[in-house]
Every structure is written in C-alpha cells, then in structure tokens.
Image (cartoon, rainbow, N blue to C red; front, side, top):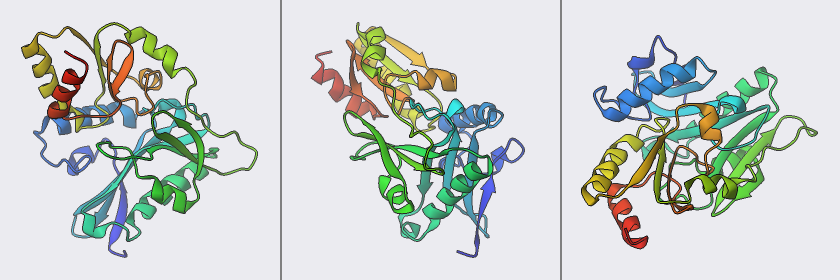
Length: 259
C-alpha cells in the first residue's frame, strides 16, 4: 500500500477528482454533489480520497462533526461518518478501508472529540450505508439500534463519555407526513438524483399527488423521520422506503400501497 495516499478534498481541488466514483463532470449527480460539497466543506465536513500514485482513485470517506452531520443521530462530541467506500472489489479486504477509517479516527482525536460514530444496517440489500464488519473489527461497539435494522456503532475515546444514540421520536416525526405520499431527499448522495428524476416522472404520469421535500441543511437532515435521513418515501405516515430505490422498485411500492 506504499503507492497509495489519502488526499483531502477542498474547494480548490474539488473538480480534480471523481465524487463517490462518479467522474463525468456533466452527470447530474456529479453536478449536484459538487454544489453540495462546496457548502458543506465550509461547515466542517471532511471528504477524503484514497488515490494511487498514477492518479487512480480507489476509495473515499466522508464525515462531519455531529452538529453538521446529515444523519438523524444524537451524537454530541462525536465525528459521524456518512460514507466509506473502496472500489473495485479486487482491492477490497486489503486494508484500504481501514486506512480511510484510521484517518477519520485520528482527525477526531486531534480535535479532542468524544469518538467516532456511524449508521449501519444488519441487512445491506439495496442500501448505501456502510458495512458494519470493518467497524466491528476496528473496535466499534453497538451504541443503539432502530427498526427495522439500523445500527449506530461507536468508538469512544474515553470511558466515561456518553454513547451516541438515535432520536427516540421517529414515530412522532412521521406524524407530519400522515396524509398521502411524501418523498424526502437531499444531494448528499449523488446517486439519488438519477432515480429521483425517474420517480418524479412516474408520479407525474400517474397523476399522483405528492409532496417533495429537499433537505437543504444538516439540521433538517437530523430532524428527518429515518436514521439514514437523506432519502425516504412515506405514505400515510408509514415509511415505505428508508433508502434510495430505483424507479422500478418505486413502481412496485406504488402497487403495494395501491396507488
């Protein structure tokens, strides 16, 4: 791994690299993510790439202090990881993910924080949440859980600091969306954009009344009705999708709820 380095992405080199492995600068997701990053980097978010000497990027990690996180967690004093990803599969399980995670841990320690936290799931099918295995192997412990299978893992730097937790009022938060179809989204994940456009086209063609809510600040994301926060579909106060879905899956959801 001697030919690999971790690079800090900032506003001056923002366009030099792919974002979440999207490298086409004209891709709607790339454009949206770049605009989102420009604002968030000034707020304390860190976005780091794992790059080989020849300039090929093979991984990234994105994290922010709890006050600026785009996850619905209560983690005062913690650094919260949004995403960590290495690619292609041929380089996975070779220590690159650990290298990225270590940079976040060291960053949080240098800032005198309580620890590092991350939202994971016991079932990863169709989600963009981080796999829990890497964190457990690194010493993270289960701090909290939330239905259906969300987990909040944490590494504490001091024994006596409180563990982070999920909000206890997700049910109450859903009360705001108890009538009809509501789609909640943000540009934190660049892959949401493509499906979102197709989903909006589908509801338009079917003539389905709906509310579309874009989360524009970290505070709004932290107040979301699901732990992942940045994408959800709610119908009559019930969550029918708590992570990004394809338009095909969305059409199946509409059938399931008789729309």
